[in-house]
Length: 405
Image (spheres, helix red, strand yellow):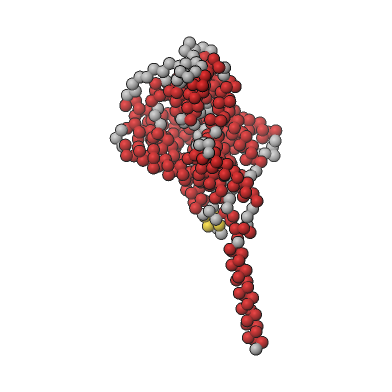
């Protein structure tokens, strides 16, 4: 009998342990819930709100916001759990670390971009270069900031990666940060895409601060001339070769950007052109956005460095805008045909949003003032300029780091 009771006791104990284990598994998510998750849910919710309610770059902010919520679910099952990679980590390793997503998205951007306005007004290309000023200003600002507050600990390569936020070019920011500052990839990418979405909020105050009403009312004559098909086909090939010679690091991005444009201009692969503009661009945008959001785990995102990066990213955007506007004002000192200084603000890579903002502000001052086409010319040159600037950073910064070291 004693043996029987002993067996029953052991069986009951095992059953109780099994029940307790099952119970704990049922509520494992609640047990491992962290209050910091709530902060990230709010941040993700704000991004989703801006996408839906304010229509700020919804194709980017909506998946980024939801990705931020997914990666901050208890146990990180969507990212990885029990030593196994989850869905989002697979996407991150395959698409971000390898730079596949940023490069593929540039094919779609190239297929959507018409460079004819730049041919009509080639001097607008200078604004695409001038509007990259904020990148290098912010690099210097980060280094100075680190010198004053050494506990922050940004390296030279990380300073360059933060500065590239000012390019207003998400894919370029991802590529540069992935190579030079992988630990800061999350906040840098989120800052780049968020500020791209907030260009309509950021640029107008800066433009008004640096220009007078009279300057904003300057009208620009736009002369439309025929651009040959041969020129439009040679252009993407020539830009790819020249950019790769100047900044070899830009070759993957500029090459695929121009390949997409060649699909558009060739006129013989319309099916591929439409696929690049629609299916490819849409699919990669979804995957890129949700994967970027997945880099926003609270353990890496809720740090003092993240707040500093967000602040410095804003500085980069402001000084990119200021650099373009001030360059236009400088040209007006020597030019008979005055340039509306607002055109300089369109030299950033945020296409076509920056050009639309400039046109809207021009119409507010003078309903009959149409400067959209010159603004678009500066804007498309900014797309090329931002990628080349990123390539210069990727080429020069590692060499300087070795030299300084």
